[in-house]
Image (cartoon, rainbow, N blue to C red; front, side, top):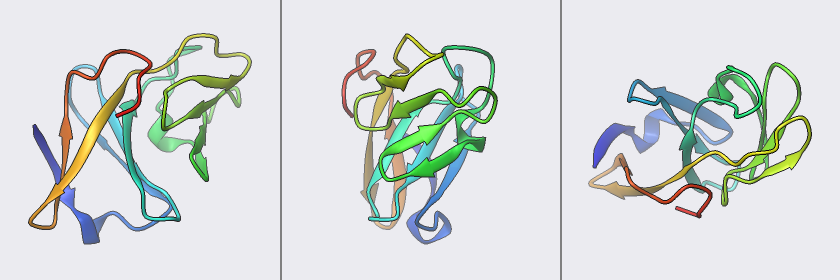
Length: 107
C-alpha cells in the first residue's frame, strides 16, 4: 500500500502521478470517485496523468486514445491494450494505492 497524498490535496477533476515502477496515475473524478491506473499510455509513451479527464475516461495527451478508469480498457483507437488498474482506499484522510491488481481489472 503506497500513500499518495491527502484527499483534500487532490481536487475533483485532477490527477497526481506517483513515481513507482511503472509510474501510476491517481485520478479523482468530478463525482469524487478515486481511480488508479498505470500512468503510461499503451499506444505510445505518454503520461496519462497529463491527459484530459471526463467522467470516468481519461484521454491520452498525445494521440487522443481514451481509457476507462474503472477497467483500464481502451475505449477508442489508437490504443488497443488496457492499462493496469489498482485499488485505491482512503484511510485517515490519506489516499493509498494498493499494487497488484490484475491487468485490465477494476480496482
